[in-house]
Length: 207
Image 1 (cartoon, rainbow, N blue to C red):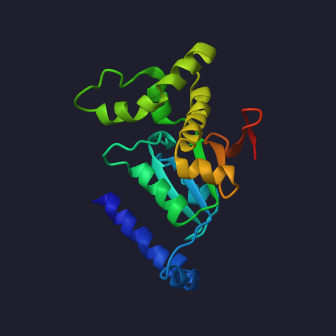
Image 2 (image 1 turned 180 degrees about the vertical axis):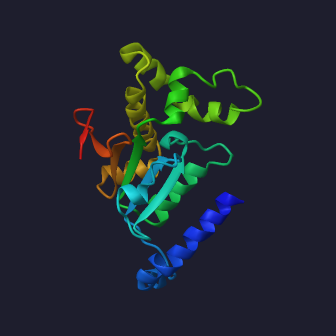
């Protein structure tokens, strides 16, 4: 109960300060949202995109999951949560830019690189294993080139998600005609530095 009590205390502070300060903005948002940016980030508690980008309410459409992964385009029946959110942001909200933001000390990328859940066919860990299976080829590439290099794995994870984004027809079409831009980013927890991917060179550099 201590954790939920802390949340309620935080909510009360928000009502007294944050909500009151942005009251006019909240009134506008009650009528609808029109963010220009979508951010796909990790669920890790240390990397909140709204905090990192100092963003106000309604400015970003955010999806968070283990390792900030975007699955490839699929038409099979299923619960495609990330794909549904992406489709909503791109085709309905018509965001103009999508950022995939990986981060340092990512547990999902570490699990993929070390093979921590490779044998978790059933029981605890099998959902994680199925999800980070998307990084298997990237894992093999990193191991071959860098060995057990966690940062290299984290950066490669961003590249995987960008490549998968481009398998969605309504993403690739909009990128081709200039309506949509894709960006890769990496937040280093240890020093708080944001890096951006230059896709022409394939390298990340501080923003």
